[in-house]
Image 1 (cartoon, helix red, strand yellow):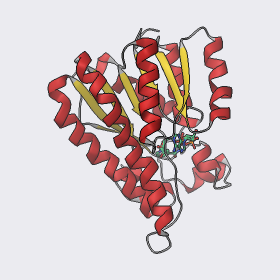
Image 2: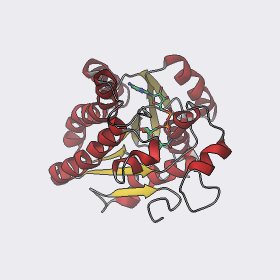
Image 3: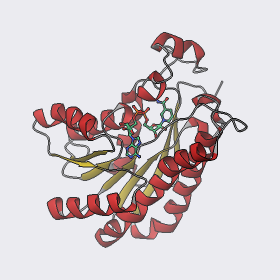
Image 4: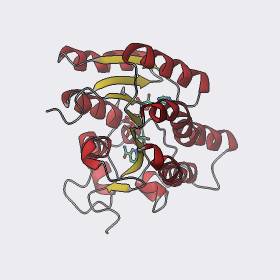
Length: 253
Ligand SMILES: NC(=O)c1ccc[n+]([C@@H]2O[C@H](COP(=O)([O-])OP(=O)(O)OC[C@H]3O[C@@H](n4cnc5c(N)ncnc54)[C@H](O)[C@@H]3O)[C@@H](O)[C@H]2O)c1
């Protein structure tokens, strides 16, 4: 299990769901994991388990929408491990409101975390990758960033924020390919994490409501983590600007 042996990987939103599954998988594949999240307590609980396996893990409280917060993480990681090989911009929030019902402060908050947070992550980490002459970035968008927000609670702000992540990914891929920095996006369909649990639905109810054609009709966080692992690893060395949909056939349907 050494698909990421020795690589330093920053993961945002690593205290829960897809981010936590990614941190666990990366650690198992030999990466030095920098697990970050806005929730300090949840993060501490989450990484205890990973550290117990003997993996190398650093934790850092990070609000992805804060430029100062990003500067502090990058400075600490560079001081500790000298380099940043992988960035997974995973942190995100949902909002189950359509275009007419969304208030300006709600719109701004979703965009600040999902879109601005992804941009700030790349803005702060890419200079270090450029110096090293290599890097892999995986941005977690959504199926809702491609086929409308129906996949994620019919949210206008969420869809817009994730559509922006999709196009920002292609911009970055194009702009930094010359530095051997690869940038790809992952587009999950419905995955039973806190993001969906917060709506008060059981896994069975969420599966019934989903249009994924593959049983059990709702995915696990690990289903997405495996896709992120591939794009972050050297196995995807000739892959950039791509969008990997992992949705149990939702979009095909
Ligand atoms: N679960 C799904 O069905 C689904 C579908 C499509 C896309 N996604 C995307 O996957 C990503 C991960 O979501 P999840 O399903 O694991 O949800 P989750 O709620 O389980 O995890 C999200 C994590 O992000 C953290 N976070 C929230 N705001 C933050 C901020 N400002 N700074 C740093 N961390 C912050 C939370 O504390 C939490 O630990 C999100 O970008 C989400 O939009 C999820």
